[in-house]
Image 1 (cartoon, rainbow, N blue to C red):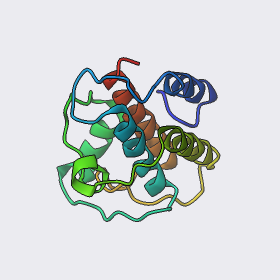
Image 2 (image 1 turned 120 degrees about the vertical axis):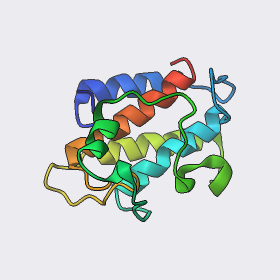
Image 3 (image 1 turned 90 degrees about the horizontal axis):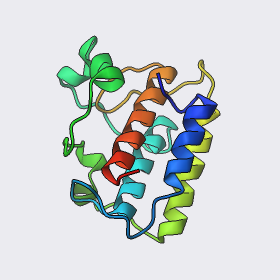
Length: 151
């Protein structure tokens, strides 16, 4: 299964990200391409321990449903996000498109260097995930939003 630890999977994601422009129009949803780039950075910051987001207890945070949703089931278009990752709820700081894109790329690079035994925080929606499951979930999240923008 695709994930950010796999070199080819990561290179494919980076290639797709290189095609996003500040004026790329979404196929669905409310975010523009710049907001999406900033939105993608937040879960990576959580996984790296740069920011802390508490667990939101729900059916999504307990096995086996957390693994099914985070790892295999399709994510629908316009699926809601947690408030901490919601561009319109949190009003994440948006700077310069190129700078924010570079930040995202740096976060992906940092995450990809984690080892399987490295400590990693609890996912705020899906609860406990192994590093490999985090890598899969992050890949799926980025892929989902690149598809949103036709990439």
